[in-house]
Image (cartoon, rainbow, N blue to C red; front, top):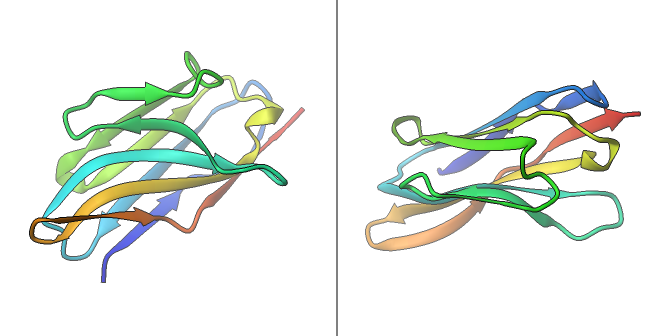
Length: 120
């Protein structure tokens, strides 16, 4: 069974930092784009950052210069280093991974989410 599991959320003061991790496990033939999304209470889920298998990155304007996404293809993992956190970064953060679980077929997988709370 394929799983995508996040870790690293928590409570931090404004100006602080956290690092989120996400690992995909199970029978996986390949990994493509991986990324982080977030959903604050009463709001829609939004893109935070994505990274391609080749390392190309894309960030939401609201996190540029503060967050850094990276990945380890061998470990089927993606990370999000979050610095200079603001109260408006408070949300549940979800990991997304495009995985080949049947040869030639790519599917989207989501983690269960990890809560990030930034106090002012």
